[in-house]
Amino acid sequence: QVQLMESGGGLVQAGGSLRLSCVASGSILRVNTMAWYRQTPGKQREVVATITSGYSTNYADSVKGRFTISRDNAKNTVYLQMNSLKPEDAAVYYCNALITTMTFVISNYWGQGTQVTVSS
View 1 (cartoon, one colour):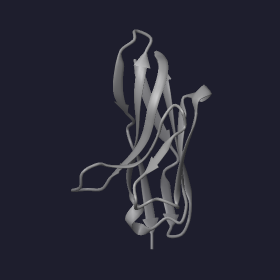
View 2: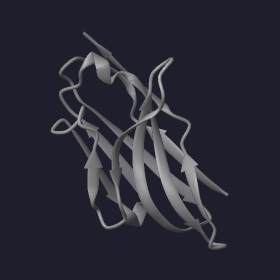
View 3: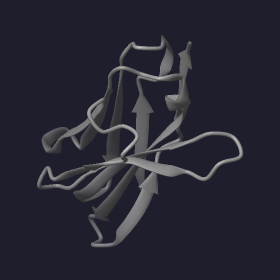
């Protein structure tokens, strides 16, 4: 069984910073691409940033230059450093990972989500 556990959400003023973390644990052989998504009520979940196991990154246009995704492969952990936060960044942020398990099954996993609130 594989689990993703996020942490680091909270309330911050506009212009402030937060750092999200997500740890993958369980019967893991390899963690492939990892990503952060976000979702607000009534809207579809959208990708914020992705990072491959080789550290290649991609960002949504709305967060380029403000957010940084990184990972520690030894710890099966992905981070999202969010700077210059805006009220429109407020959402539930979800960690996502494509994981190869010890039984060589490749599946997509989601964390439970962490709330980010940005006050204006």
